[in-house]
Amino acid sequence: MAALDWKQLGLKCGIEIHQQLEGTKLFCNCPTLIRDDPAHFTLHRRLRAVAGETGDIDVAAAHEVAKGKTFAYEGFEDTTCLVELDESPPLALNNAAFTAALQLALLLKAKPIDQVYVMRKTIVDGSNTSAFQRTALVAQHGILTTAHGTVTIPTVSVEEDASRIIKNTPTETLYRLDRLGIPLVEIATGPEIKDPDHCKEVAEAIGMMLRSTGRAKRGLGTIRQDVNVSIAGGTRIEIKGAQDLKLLPTLVAYEALRQKTLLEIKDELAKIKEISPSIEDVTHIFAKSESAVIKSALAKKGVVLGIKLHGFAGLLGKEVQPGRRLGTEFSDRAKASAGVGGLFHSDELPHYGITKGEVETVRKALGCNERDGFVLVADLAEKARPAMDAIIRRANETLKGVPKEVRRANDDGTTTFLRPMPGAARMYPETDVKPIPITPDVLKHVVLPELIEAKASRYEQLGLSHDLADLAARSEKAPVFEGFVKRYPGVKPAYIAETFLTSARTIKRQFNTDINPSDEDFMALFAALNDGKISKESVLDILKENRPVKSVLSKYEVMSDAELEKTLKQIIADNKGMPFNALIGKAMAQLRGKAPGQKISELLRKLAG
Image 1 (cartoon, one colour):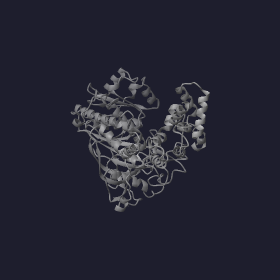
Image 2 (spheres, rainbow, N blue to C red; image 1 turned 45 degrees about the vertical axis):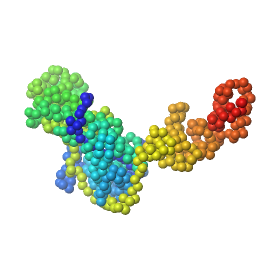
Image 3 (cartoon, one colour; image 1 turned 45 degrees about the horizontal axis):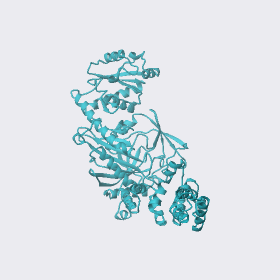
Image 4 (cartoon, rainbow, N blue to C red; image 1 turned 90 degrees about the vertical axis):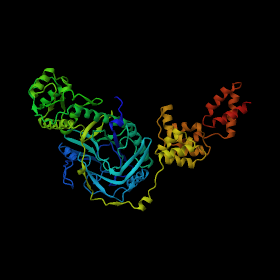
């Protein structure tokens, strides 16, 4: 991809970071445990969109309901409750999650609001059994200072996570309720992010603050970034579900490229005011087709429908993102709206078993000239016609430039249509949860955490290297490490950190052995080192045994000075005339872990004369 001038493009970018929190769920006492064992029960629901308090039905909700899908939910008798099933009102807002949100707000210099009101946000994709997500604004008007300038933080909120999708078909989506209700802190930035790399910098800075609270969950899927991108002449596009921080610059760059290309296509179609083709049944043309997709559709008593797209010749195949074309965008919309399987456009034909003769016959049947493109859909009639309607809508949006929509992040940094951009009609008050005042007394009890950067700097003062200090500061075991340092002053903090945090990896690399020592094992190990009962040389051997440390310590206890001298004298006597370097090699091999190496060397040199 050629380099783009972000300033000249008028790039605007902001992100929303959603971080799961440890503890219990936001509105019940169920654990935040993600389970892979077989579910205990499954229930089925159908959801419908209704008008909000403004009298309007949200456009995104209407889009989902039009699919007519059934939703199934898996749950567990011991970790799922009636709140998650939407059969019981929510309990009070989780205070620990609320406090974590306040900590983040104060770290970001945001102003807590006077009274927190829980709201319901309409969600009709089935991921919430209630068809809404509970969310609460906690603070606003914060700032984040970065190397590229100040970024505003309009809002800090706390909300509940959605169910976890297990399986998706055109007619039913299966969810698991273990993730529903897990507390999320949502931090939204303003549109001051200047370029793709700046987006990553902002996300890293906020992520560091989140981990500094000690409340953030860790692991894949526990943090998600939604990215908002627009360029001059384009529109705000929300990209959902970016989990990999390294992918953020690519997502921003590819979306800017997509909008730039769509605006170029708009200019090429400037003379066309509206696309309103008739939908033609061209099934008869493909009665003897060798296309596997078309043969499959016709075998199910399906049809092949076609539409002419005036002026679209050569544009349907134009690349809008790497590997994705305008025709791909039309296909995404048709699949999202009607779940169709077979869609072709003129710029990719003849191909896929469709012959040149069939293409020419279709063009004639649809009345296409050399400037016109066409689209074919092969599927059941009840799916093919809604798909064509969706394509016609998307074609008309092409005349206007960049359509307002929510898109899903793909693993390669490209995006796929998810749903229309929701409107203001999707939010209304939660009547089952009392408002929560944020008084001066509440704020007085909010303790700000030490930031990871500051903690790492403090660890360097203890003698840890820069990399080891950073590793220790970012580790969830940092409080345990600090406890060891205070408790065992006879062991250097750097040695404690290296042993505690890296010994499992070292033993795996050196001996291909997996170990899983507990904090209690390390406590016994460092206590023995502190008291001089074992030497550092024996530490890896002790851990390598992968047994409770207390049970093997006696095997590795150091010799008394008298025992050491006696043993060294015997080694000298058994190897008379041996050069000192060879002699010390024998001594070290025999006495490894029984005494410090320097002590063995000095005493042997003295005794050998």
